[in-house]
Image 1 (cartoon, rainbow, N blue to C red):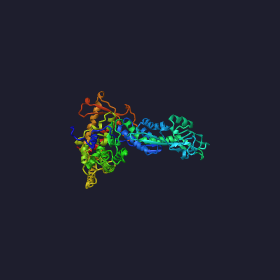
Image 2: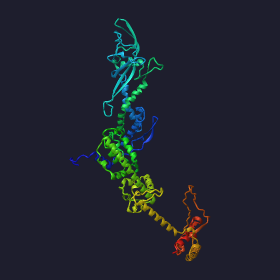
Image 3: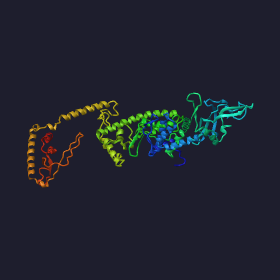
Image 4: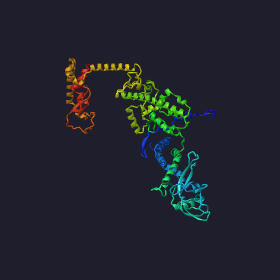
Length: 623
């Protein structure tokens, strides 16, 4: 390729991927019902390392979105979709990275901003600070000194997570909570030199000017503070508020994980599919409607199931004003080959669609979906015709000619090579061949013109298919609605019935023919035949040397619909009545004529001297 050649367009690159094959292409599995926090949701089946990376990405996305519909804490949500992808351990490590910053900084006075001070009953003390700093407790005017009852302080912690964000964007989580302060009686002298005693916070100076170690030694340890807390009202009303550390810690951790959810999800995507792009459309563009798996079996979805799978994959960018890629065109290009062939016969405008705006993409998607469903129904009708033809004739068909006769595009090699149009017999042969390792067995059949000639001719349109399904009695001719087709079929049906009646008029039931039914000439032939054969056989049996005879034991077995087991007859008792049957013609020398010894009730009489058997034959064949 010269340097002057233009670079291939996005559509050309997509066509190249689809035509050359891509091991990361996949067909989504059907969702399964799962219970999460008492709510039933539809989740993607659990994934493993054998699945294509794109399918693992798609499964992670589907389960994340499914869990988001439940009102569950972020930690439970992340654990759910990570667990179904077998990466829950990795998820816990990522969650710990985000949560640990709160643990490390909640009691660092240098990272905290004081919001307000509160009394024991939780009420806010507006006069506790001057310039944002707690008033001192040394000598001075009473109004400028620390007021009575300072017990709690409300602070705010700003946690920076820009380094953990999946896009490295500025990310700050602000957490506010209460800390219990040491309280006692403090005394100072006012301007008149009078000692004033107040019950308030005992820390001398600004508590948040302390070092982290001093803050812990002077405030946290003496008051038994173990973590951020929220104020709870007293049990009996009035009195001091209580602190709820456990509830507040859980609330703050949930807030952090709520912000972390998207970044953790993308980190897990990188983990389940290393080296693969994790763009917004990386999973949805790998979804296709049908493919042949490693065992040679065709796996496919209906058009609607395929559409819904595409839409689930498009959730991350569904509300964007401008889509990151051409979803509507990709929807058509990833249809199954048989459906897309019919689609292309009617409309190829999707190849020229370039508008990526949300309105244009959604509008074209709706139109393409309706057309694809119509094409699917047409393909299903053809399958019913072909399969019914196979069921009625038990023969192989040259499918390309059959489809052409129906006015449809020729089926793909993929559709013919798999079990889409195989008869029940062929499917059984293919099944056992696959179990023996011969995966290509279904594709080894060679179609010839003789296969097409063996097809049933439709009474209506004359095509290579039956007019009506033999089992359901439903008309399956695809051209049944065209003028003249039904009338032609009725005429042929009447002709067939008349021909059948005419053939039955000359039919003679064999079991009702007796010697008296024969004509005089036929009776003479019968007497001559019986006399000649009986004399010859009797003489042969009397003079035959049994030493050279071939002796067989014949056991009659009859097919039956009964489910009773067959009697285990291992041997035949030689004392039962037997007869010797001479084989060969009358002119065969006796010493060269083999003999078969059989039981009398073995059914051998049907081809020897059983009159009810050979008299109808003689009647039907007088020559």
